[in-house]
Image 1 (cartoon, rainbow, N blue to C red):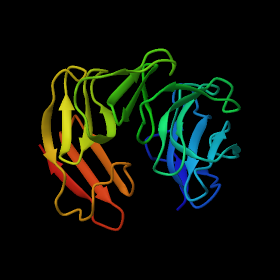
Image 2: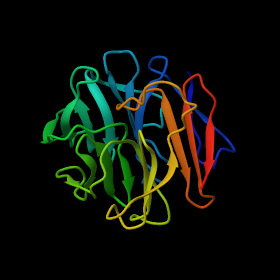
Image 3: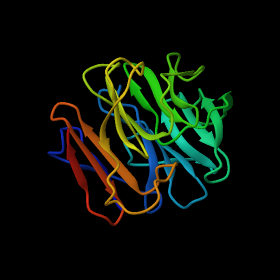
Image 4: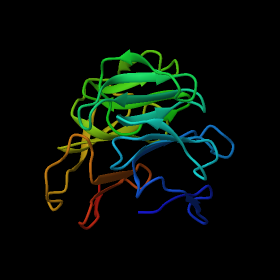
Length: 223
């Protein structure tokens, strides 16, 4: 379907030019006053990686076999590469995607999240964190099996992730966790470990969890 970006909380929307029919994941450089840099994986084009430096008005192709993606700036990108659903390791580029260097054996999931310059990425080894713009990665906490998140709350230590068991919240940066909502049994189908066809959201102020699966109703859980 079509893609768009909002910079005013949804009051207005700016169209994003589609390279194909849509994107599996996209990472945005929100540190820019008006976000311009977007790094995405195009759906059904052999894992084509594309980058935009004008907010999605135009795109430059970076080659195929991309999986999950992330970025720290307009030049520093991170990604996983390989055959579809067989992505292995994390590679890093400091020249906007022209060249890549492997920096980790962990296999990430989805799009990387950045909070105060620190990168957070779910992986097959658990939640990873990078404090040096993707050069090195360390594991945060002991929770494993999550494929969506982290969704941040009041600060860098307060966030939630989603696993096949449901939503899990930590108030202390992953040292301790509590279950706040089960995965909705009404969302029929296998919980895919790559996060395909599912979307989740967390409202830490209203204490509400949301879950949706393509072609099925959206579910809401107050906790």
